[in-house]
Image (cartoon, rainbow, N blue to C red; front, side, top):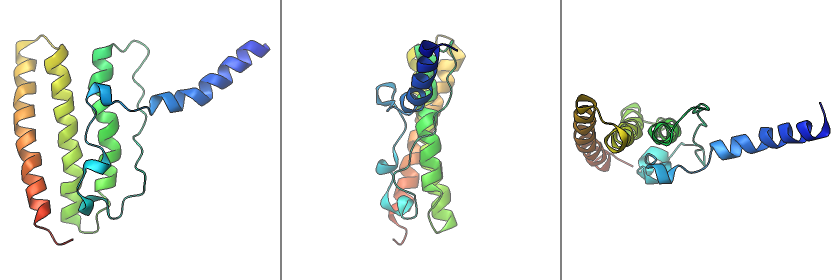
Length: 144
C-alpha cells in the first residue's frame, strides 16, 4: 500500500462516521429528542445521537430521503424508551416511530409514482399525525 492509498484510507475511515451522522434536516428528518416532551427524556443519555445507517453506494436522493427519517427515528425511540414508567416509555418510543413513518410517507409522496403506494403513504401520514397528537395529549396528563 503506497502513502497516498494509506492516507486516503485513513481519511475515509475517520470522515465516514462523521458524514454518516450529519443532520438530515434537509430530508425531513424525524422528531429529534429535543422535540420529545421532557417526560420522555428524563432518563435518556445526553445527547442522543442518531445511528448511522448505511444507505448503499447506489442509493438515490429519494432513497437517502426515505432512510433519513429512520436514522433519526432509531435514536429517538431509544431515548424515549428510557422513561421510568413503562407506559410512558412505550408512548415516548412510539412518537418517533410514528414520526419516522410520516417522514417515509412524505418521501414516497414526493418521489413515488405508483398510485397505490402514494395512497398508502397518504393514509399513513394522516393516521400517524393523529396518533402522535393523541400520544402527546396523553403524556401531558401523566405525572412528571
